Length: 193
Image (cartoon, rainbow, N blue to C red; front, top):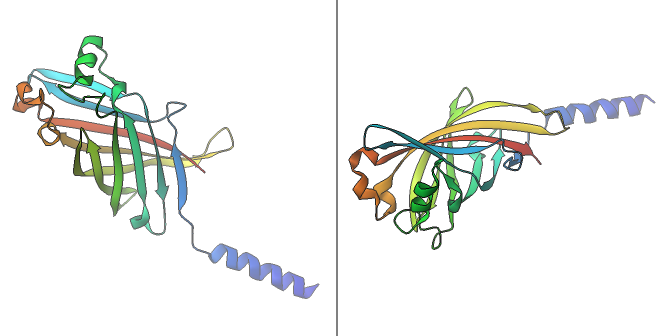
């Protein structure tokens, strides 16, 4: 009996001392708990706001070794929505996203730099409109914990700036330099697998 007690205590100690494993998450787009939004200046007079309604992705979170954190997202470019049907049709055309030729955009991380206090910089490659560019996203963890349905979730927000001239959209130069910078906002909630 004493041997079993010692063995049980040893197993508990070993289990508690084991390093935390990386956690894998699926981004919760089905229940609309994730958003990819943008804003760009319209002629320098106001902000034009928009979003991509259809995308999917995964991420890995490693609390002990944050340098192992990764993310991969695929966006349906035809799902662009600026709350104006005629403008959205133009944005889907060959003048801009050319969704018939480039139906998706993807981001795949290449590195993560931990800045402490649940903050960091996620770097990766953005494939958009036939062009691949390095992109750095400032990341903040919003929160983590169990959900009411028996799952476990983790959420982040991210900010970055895209430069329209990098992606060779034919109509973009006509918008002028005030529309060069596109501010991108990401709100990502994942369900642990």
